Image (tube, rainbow, N blue to C red):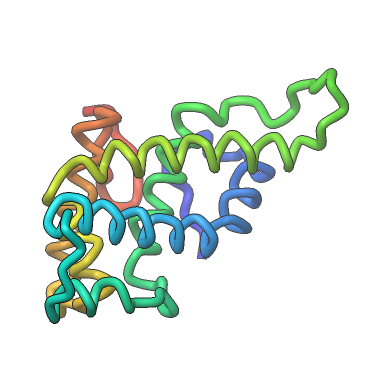
Length: 161
């Protein structure tokens, strides 16, 4: 189900590109978090039970991360998706352009978010450890977006902070 995050959230081509890339980008998020965890907390690569559990985790159920993804996608459309009818003079398909730009934005912000221990723990809690208090973890992740983009998510809508 797709939500409208703000009144003029009508760039359907961008939204479709974002939804097509959801699983691929969320898997890359999990892999980035796992790698960052190893670099921060196990730089020697020692094999303890926690590190082995994290290393061996393969993301199959990405549903716990969907709210984060949809919120970040909505924020991106709010900040960058103003015109879906722009002319592209180099012959690139509009959908491909959106996929490329969204993927770059997502990867850039995942790298930024992964510099924060709380974000790493939040993603691991939602995936590897399957923490039952998912709402609390989602709120922590939304806090990163608030700090980064200076917007708030209220009742499914984006508000300027």
